[in-house]
Amino acid sequence: MREAKSLDYFVLILLALIWASAFFNIKIATYSYGPLTIAFLRIFLGAIPVILLCYIKKIKIEAFSKDWYWFASIGVINLVIPFFLIAFGVKNIQSNLAAILMASTPLSATVLAHFFTKNEKINLVKSLGVLLGFSGIIFLFSDNILINKNNFISALLILCGSTFYVVGGLLTLKISNKKNENVTASILIWGSIVLLPISFFIEQPWNLSPRLDSSISLLYLGIFSTGIAWLLRFYILKHNGLVFQSQVAYLIPIFGVILGFLILGELITPKVIISLLAVIIGIYIVKKGSKIKIV
Image (cartoon, rainbow, N blue to C red; front, side):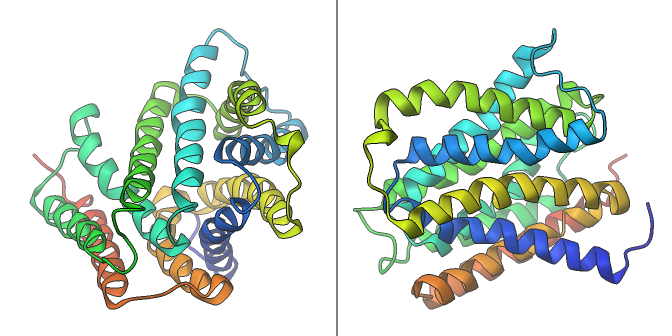
C-alpha cells in the first residue's frame, strides 16, 4: 500500500460526505416513498455502477454460482434488512440522530468479532472504547427533546440496523477469498431480487405521486450513496488499505450531524454533541486497542 497523498485524503473525505449525506436524503425520500421501496431502489440503482465496473475490469460476477446462498444471505442481512430498518426509523426521527446511531457499527463489530473470529479478540483498551461509545448512544436516548415515546422504537430499529451491517460483514469472511467487486455486485443483485416482489406487493409504488425532491433524493441514494460510494471504497482499499479506509468512521457522524442541520434545519442539542463526541472517541480508542496484540 502506498503512503497516503492529498488525493487519497480527498477521496476519503468525499466518501465520508457521500455516506453521511445518505441520512438526510433518506429523510427526504420518506416524504413520498415507503421504506421497502426506498431500500429496493437504493440497492437496485446502486448495483448498476458496481456491475459496470465488474464488466469493465472483466471480473466474473458469481451471484448464481455454487456459493449463491452466501451471496443471498449476505444480501439480505447486510443490505435488505438494514436499509429497510434505517428508512423505517428515519421517517420518525431526525437524520442526524440516525448518523450517530449508525456510527455505533465499529463498536458492535468489536464485540461480535470477539466471539465469531479468531484474530479480533477484545482487550482492555477495546473494552473501554466500546463502553464509552455505547455510553454515548445510551446518553443520546435520554434526550427527551429529540427521542420520546413516539419515536423511541424508531431509534432502536436504526440501532438494530447497524448490528445487521456487522453480522453481514462477518458473513463476508466466509467468502473472503473472492474479489470485493464480485462480492458487492453479487449481494446487490440478490438484495434486488429479494426486495423486488416484497416492495411491489406491499407498497405498490406505481400508485404513488411522489414529490420531486423525494425522487431526486432516492436516485441520489442509489447511484451515489450506494453505487458510487462502493466504487470509492474499492479505490481506497486498493491504494491505501483497510486501516486508512476505516478512518471514514470518524467523519460520517460528524458530517451527518452538520448536513442534517444545514439541509433540513435539524436541531442540535447539547446531548447530541456529547453523544457524538463519546461515540467518536470510543471508536478511536477501539481502533487504538486493535493495534495491541494479545499473547
